[in-house]
Length: 496
RNA sequence: GGGCCGGUAGCUCAGUCGGUAGAGCAGCUGGCUUUUAACCAGCGGGUCGUGGGUUCGAGUCCCACCCGGCUCACCA
Image (cartoon, rainbow, N blue to C red):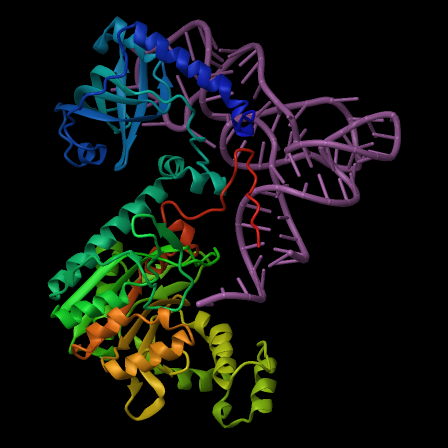
């Protein structure tokens, strides 16, 4: 098979060849890339923050701009924290070092030693005394002014996106801080973090198609987890009082603006709690992250609207929301009347749907996306959430909440089922005829007694979308799943 | 899978009525010792997504396909 060169690289070869040539010049002049540690005074952001006129410093970064002026050169270095200007003057660095610097290209990683000064135009700058090459870039950077815009390149070569678009780097730095803030908050509330299996013999705890993989040593099929729930409940049985896991779930579904097949989920459980204690915890958690990391409770969105996290957050029952939107008499109408009303409102109808499914269509199409400010939707139909505890005053409803912010489902919460016999009956009903799909190991644990508990999940990617004002999940995941490409840039054929 | 929009230099983008390929940045050469989208002078750089067709002539019109985005559907 012959290799087909990437069509994008045909013209890029000249750039690469030029830079390899420049590398050769540097190496010949004694400026070969150095691979050992380069001890810095601090990051580039630190250099600016701890600025002292005349201080001796060591700094390193990527050259992202350079302005040659004959016998001196101004350049900007960039690292993950920011940019800082350097000034390379022939008199200061010497003839050889200055000549070599001619071959330092945009994109190269260099280290400098020098002293801090302020230019005539008041920019803090390192007056370079010595410089060395720490890494050579053989490919050019994206354009400096307009940045990198090509959507596919931004996701497939995220490093270029991070280099060229500072706001992207800033967002992912915040995501990192947000995850830390979540852990700190839960720790402060007395929660313990655990890690439970990602590879499971049965993928339980949610309704979704799992990814399957072959475990050769055991000659068995394993599944990537769709939720950690059943293992965390085993830990409640074992005596963990407040426990959480913050990690990846995998669901074998399509891609969309709001779905990635692997996504980060926080699940937390509180022994002797219920849906209300969890709602309070989730609300405090989200506000903690908003306040400490994003520093704002009003968040502008890409469409120009705004999410306002101001308290109190609305709590409203599912049925009340339906009546608000579809008419106070919705639940008094007969089937034909409801279908007519639904169509009037612009919804689909289908004779095969149950009444609950018809109502859910109204909820999803007309209500959910309008809930921009945080809203706890409570008392969902039992048919939609088969594994939660029923409301004591109405067995057709379950004692749960669905927290919606920005029109996205951010966090479901439950009063968990701890009745082993009830749980067995429901799992068996759900598995249908296939007894091998019932998680007997989980039921065995429950039969040893699980405390009543509240449980909640928080979709971390969706939460980051809300807090970051992003409208696509791809913008909050560093390496979002994309369609695979072969060597010729085509999608592989999918057989089915 | 349907509908709509897009693919032109390494990057960001123009390209009129069909008349034979452009700009800025980046690159190369020269000049310039406080510049900052540095500046000045000069030079090189293209499978116009791919393949057909119409035409004297196609980046431009037609057909098919590939790739991407949005959206609807599906899935959950």
